[in-house]
Image (cartoon, rainbow, N blue to C red):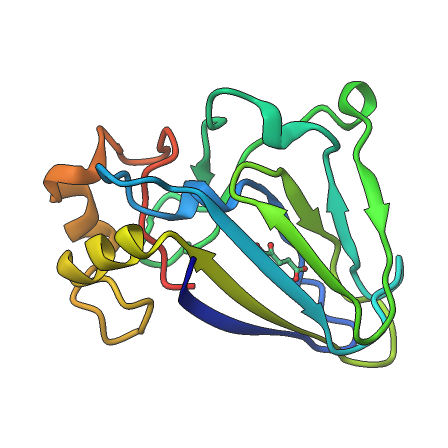
Amino acid sequence: MAIDFDQIFAKAPHSGGSAFQWHQDQAYWPRMDADASAATCWLAVSDTTLENGCLRYLPGSHKEEELRPHFTMGSCRESATTLFTPIDEDREHPAHVPVSWGDLIVHHERCLHASAPNRSDGWRYVYVLSLHKAAWVAAERAAGITYSYNDPISWSSWNRWPMAGGAEEGGTQGGGQERR
Ligand SMILES: O=C(O)CCC(=O)C(=O)O
């Protein structure tokens, strides 16, 4: 495995907009002729609780054969960079996963997860390292994807990109490179 990108997620106190909607990480990545196997390594740099927006997981979702359909949060992909897939919480029974500062969670590229907004008085910090097969990372770099805001890839250009796999305005069947 090779490092593809890393991120820091800092949820400010009482930040209503700091929720992550239900998604599978693979939905954010391009569709390519390469093995998309990945391990998202999520390191808690604060205690994460029900109040400050700990992770929620849908048990067993990583075994689903197909990526679920994902949609953008707004009508325009350039301004709405978040993807989501609707789940029926009453029927699918997601779990909250509160952890302590220093705990590491590793999840599969198809594992459905989300987190609530931070409603506490303190910050919630997380460091994420995304590992992929080296061939996948090489294919991304060859396509100009470095996960930098300076990448010459945008949602508009993504929709015209031959590897987009049929992504259309308003929704995508798992295609979609995201600045994350
Ligand atoms: O840190 C969170 O609350 C969500 C992180 C996430 O969705 C991810 O790492 O893919």
